[in-house]
Image 1 (spheres, rainbow, N blue to C red):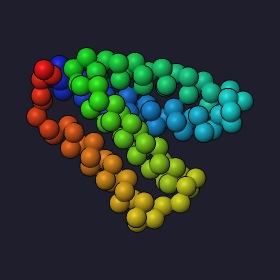
Image 2 (tube, rainbow, N blue to C red):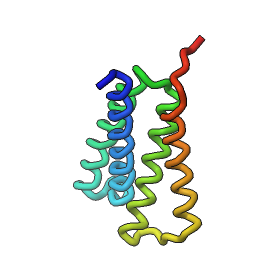
Image 3 (cartoon, one colour):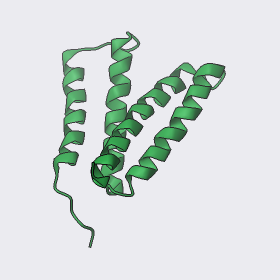
Image 4 (cartoon, rainbow, N blue to C red):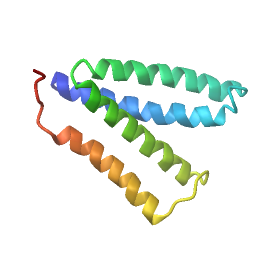
Length: 114
């Protein structure tokens, strides 16, 4: 596996962890619940560390856009799947658009900075 492919896998894993920490943050009730607060702290740290590793091979703007987009889509997807947030076809379309745009950034050819 190439260094760039590994960076993209780390970025994807970090985006998944972003969704975990965002969900845990919501469940922490202002950091008053011990377990969700601990899950938030650990996964936020790992997610940020993964993003830091990924930007060694992926341009920062692209990596950050993918990290935020995939993390946000997974967070709202989980909220809809668990009944915390209502789902509707238009919302699903827009979430699919976020994921599609993030995937599109991966498909672009690598450009070298000037």
